[in-house]
Length: 286
Image 1 (cartoon, rainbow, N blue to C red):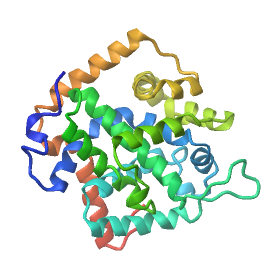
Image 2: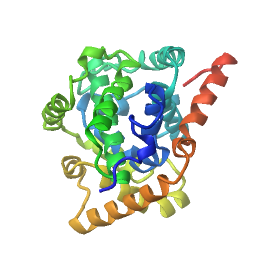
Image 3: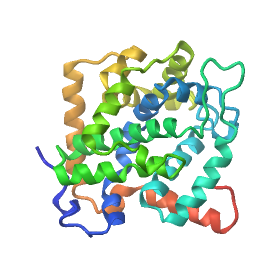
Image 4: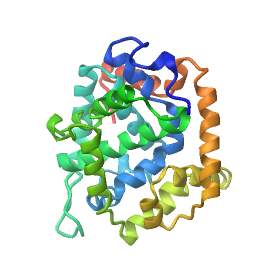
């Protein structure tokens, strides 16, 4: 199997961590696998109820899908390729929104967006998603690249309140963490309906958009999901679909390997630049 393109590995790329992190962020991976990652994140009952019951209307995907998508991708860009100043500014902006995301006395599950354990889970899902798309695009990762990717992905949690020591010590420890948490996944009927209607089937978008794109979106979303999550949502899959999915992803990888890093990064750098412009002008960042 083809590995991550040789010009991108830590041994041959710029030796600085920021340069290596840039090679892991592939916009097409986020486009194809982002919805699956949302499903995984919301598989944690506290995260799922927090999103479903959120009173921060400006940040709700079901009401403002494009804005929600841009905010999420901006956060990923800031966390992975932004400066420490960028991270501090976006942390403050995100915290302003998260202050309102907490369970009430009527909530079925207790949750708080400031809970570092929930942020660890979300960061773990993002790492899983990035690792999966890199492997599907380019083949298995060599040990040095896999270890570096794993270490750097802690930033998705530490950019908020997750303490660095909470990130499992190595990939083996992470697998133990993941298996324990994935085994406790439980998606209630309301969260399931939200995920199927809004996330998988593109519910917030206009009908014509759904007709054209929902079948393809559902295919890639299901392909990126571990079987446990497919079962929870009742999404059908088969060995034949898996082979087709992997073949398409390899074909995309053959195209991506020929592109400059800045093109593979799109739209991350654009969103990071937009965040910096908004910050300089004193405009809201989220």
